[in-house]
Length: 422
Image: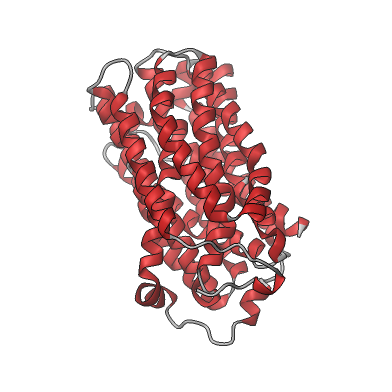
């Protein structure tokens, strides 16, 4: 289990590094470089639009790689998704700006972002299932939480690299070539990830399946459509909160409040580090008290904290911004630390890879794709405190709370209950 958990954590960290470094670049430099004919706000919105394409592609990647995972095994998913995401991320760092190749620049950016999302759509399901299906029933939440520590680690790596480059380079150097370096580094990380995953064993649950679904997605739509919609709606708040903190707030604080890019990145990264370190503890609570209760508590906390968060952000004070970000991310991890055990337990083994991945990434479309765009538009028309953004995020939290309330508990009562009825 330690070797499996470490390999899953490393792989998800690398793939989410690839995904997050694009979001940071979209908030800071992609607007003026790839949409120079737009106003500053319109350029940021356009850059966030290409950012959102990655989320739209993720459910499609879930269907593609979920089919492979349910038909041929979880292990091939880990290799294929990592190759696709890594290659497309390196390619983003090589795309010339608008001033060099014109409209082809944003078109290529859009295509590569789509491929990034396609790869990441398969990554989460493969990594989580390989860990969850090996884990003992009584500690499935704990072991399954290791892949969930990959996203915060990937975020810290992505933003840490941007932070170092921001400090060491001038604004002109960063805009000309410095922002590309983190994308090129993705190639080295992808090779390391492939080496780590090359010797992992196949999931025992997959090997026990007697009859595989011929077309897992069709089976999922026919028999589990309600469950897919509920899990997608339930997870929307996590994505909305996370990307409001890590992407929209970065653009808002630097452009509207005039806060230094280095200061905002430092505040966000510090909050993400605390959140990541709390993940195993919350997962243990999920093994003790159940998945659903923690998800309900996290949703309620998010609904209550969104207005205070935007008020603290609007102060421009580093300590208060950090406090706002931390409260939001602690509410987020109260839900998402147990999701990696909860989603696989909700779906039967023969469609589990497709079902868990589609539900997870559908939440990304509902909560992550639109949040930076909607929040930027809402903040533009308001005063110094973007209350409209707080209302939008609170509304998503309440929607997710209702969806979680309709889902069943899945925590095994004993080892014999490792595979609950669906």
